[in-house]
Each structure stands twice: as structure tokens, then as C-alpha cells.
Length: 129
Image 1: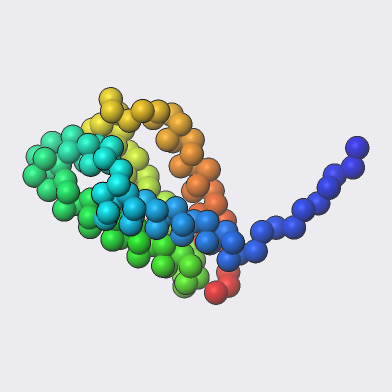
Image 2: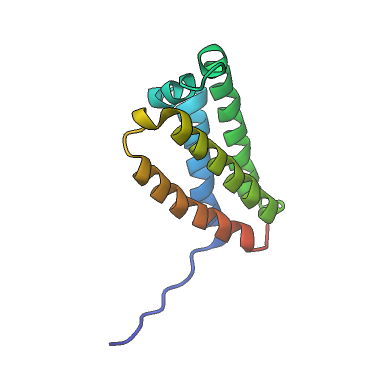
């Protein structure tokens, strides 16, 4: 059997995929409020969620939209990757800590986010604007 080599996807395609995830999560799910589960997860954070949950979600959504633009820009890709990894790890850890009981598939969430972060890291490791 022979190995078949395939071309590595262009960097802009990889960045576009990562940016699309942040744009969807930020704009659609949080800013426009189309993912009710996310509001329920934030509401479970003691002393914070019930009081500031909606404001937090809107601000987080705006940050995620900015991340999408940063990814596409290609400016400081390593720092951008570190920021994305940090944000997603913090969000996942807090979601599991405070709202594990309402997250439909916690293990699946972790596996999918690890795969996403591998792509994030690849984008961060490849120089070029």
C-alpha cells in the first residue's frame, strides 16, 4: 500500500475556520443570545451569574468577536493562540465547575475543544500574515 500525500490547507483556510468558530460563539450565541444553554451555564455561577450573567455573556461575546478578527489578521499569531487557549480553558473549567449538571455532554465538549485548540495552536505556530 502506498501513502497518498495531500497538501496542507492554506493558512487562511485554517485561520478562517478558527475565526468562524469564535464569530459564531461570540456573535450568534452570546451577543445575539441564540444559545440559551450558555445563559443557563453562566447563571449557575454563585454571586456572579444571577446578577451579572447577561452582561458577562454580551461582553464575552464581544471579546470572542475581537478574537475572530485577531485570528484572521494574522498579527502576532503565537500570542493570539495563547490568548485563545487560555480563554477556552478558563471557560471550560468554570463551566464544568459550576454547571456540569446542565452541560449535555461534558466529555464531548472537552474532546471537541481539544481538537479545536490543536487547530488554534497550528495557526499560532505558522508565521505569516
